[in-house]
Image (tube, rainbow, N blue to C red; front, side):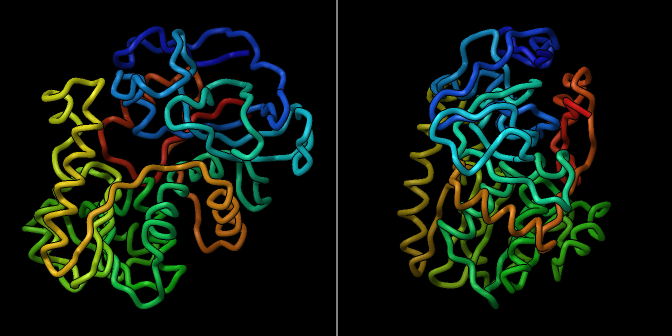
Length: 337
């Protein structure tokens, strides 16, 4: 099978497209999927850069990738909900799911059926970001109708899903975006969009029930005052120092533990400010989240936002574009037409 191979930690120069052994036949509880599309996520280039060396599945040469959409090729014993020929999408593992290949074998519980009204590229684009949003706004926080929620980076992959999901709940949604993406974020349902490049964002916000830092690079200390008493700041980062800052101090192997310590300190600090809260969120591949994403897509309450589609051979360009941090929706690799 054709696959993207990472020959060692580093930048895009360590990636190549080559023939690799076919994904293994599925064992009990597993399925093998013929991948049509796989999305690019920040965790993918962070893993390839060596920032998560403790995650399993990184034997070199490694096939990167986190989520995908495709057609079931084979099923293992004990799999009753899926069969060969079913169109599915899912999230296997952040950065180490081996989805940048024509075939992937993984637990069946990591996949759900793809709704008929979305393409494989669209379905692939929402698995990890959708799970991250639901982990943040449906598990860490149970977002309710009428609550005030702010979403940073509202035009990005996580942010665009979060804006739509929060609107589907009936929350009052505001977001940040560049001036060029203002109308796009408004079209997703946001009632107000703040240009992050002009002025002090914290000075423009108040009375929030939830502040969702979808990009994960904001310092929570600067935004706690935007929350109501009892409100929560939820981040996909550490809420304080950036990943690069932490890596410079603790090294790539231990930076995440430094980030966790930051979150603990921020939690203690926030509790003294009328019991405001700080939480870090990871995209956990929970079956209930994947099923909910499928429902949202099928109903049209959330629409996938594919910014650009790349052939597999252009994976280096896709990685380079993704690391600019400027996107309207998601970038997706087209693996099987």
